[in-house]
Length: 166
Ligand SMILES: [Fe+2]
Ligand SMILES: [Fe+2]
Image (cartoon, rainbow, N blue to C red):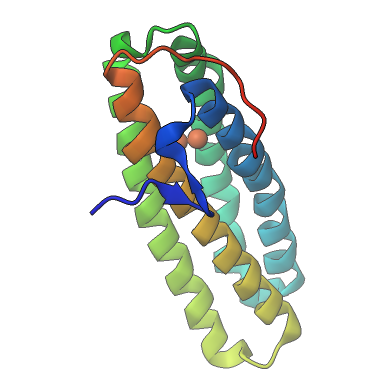
């Protein structure tokens, strides 16, 4: 059963425009702060953190590219009530979401491997904590796009008004 309630808010009752605005504020802007923090913490671990550092440094370019495609191509189509013409960009985004999941699993494995020798290291603990936040946010973000935003846009729903959160 797909849950449409995320962080206590039932998105099935909100306009597409409100949903896009929420995704930009709550996820796109937040990931842009989380990625540099992960890089900084991995860097503080020196040689030991090198594999994690390299992984995040490479992946961040793909994530930035994905966010930019949504912001510059797909979301403007949805906001212009052209979401029902967006099947092609949406299928590209869904494929990239699948890649996000695979990358999350790989990065988690790298961080856990490092934890085998660094479990008492406060920098590793911070890295592990930041990663857990990032993972939870990225999964919620993808869920909201795949399960709520994309199907509603493809159905031809109008973007509607921007509404303040209650
Ligand atoms: Fe997004
Ligand atoms: Fe996305």
